[in-house]
Length: 101
Image (cartoon, rainbow, N blue to C red; front, side):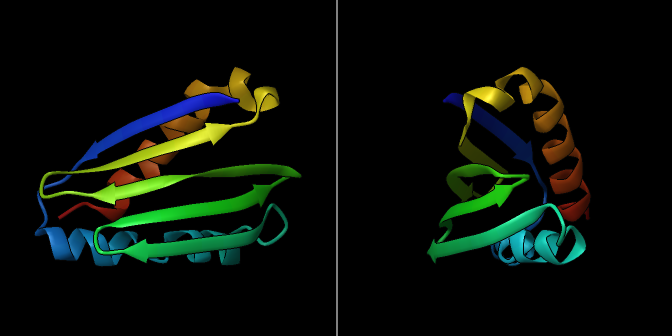
């Protein structure tokens, strides 16, 4: 497994950022129904655990929404570790769009 650690800064009120981030994976599953399956999100306050399957690979991790940033800490299967930079860039772009003022 390879570690995936991403920090996305934001300038929204923390509760607004949290409400935008919650349910993000369900939305992605609807948009990418042929690619993303078995989405699970469990939230406890401003921290959530997630897992899903993408093209047969299982991914999981933790999302945390703080006052100034969202952090994502996940585990990538070894087979995807070669695409870690590309995956990180796509997540940062999508989350950045979601958290824009």
